[in-house]
Length: 130
Image 1: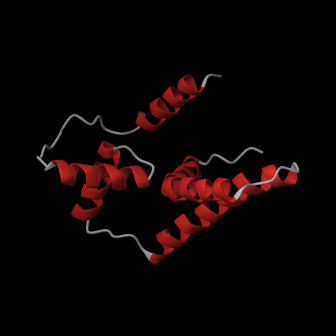
Image 2: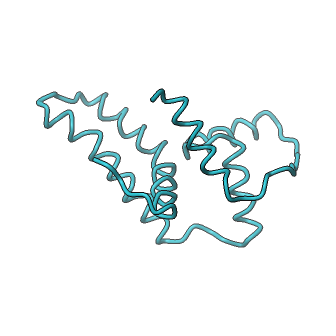
């Protein structure tokens, strides 16, 4: 199945069961502030709208990341690193220092999304397939 079709199906599954989002809140930022927000949201593997919504709701609800949630994100980072580095090494391929640095950048940018996806799969009751 093409990746776009699969992505669309995942979005539709997430939408089912929740109230439609029909309200919006707007604010203005300087170009420097926008650049900062875009960088931070990208570092967390999210688009600006998703990240902003998550941050605003967390602040409104008074929730802050816990040591436990931070630990879970770091465990997912280790998992990403292991999965993405061990497989090529087991096939006998070599990894250059630059490839490893790029892998670390990838893990840093995607660890929160990986943790969120893992938590969502637990919530849905789905299991990983090999």
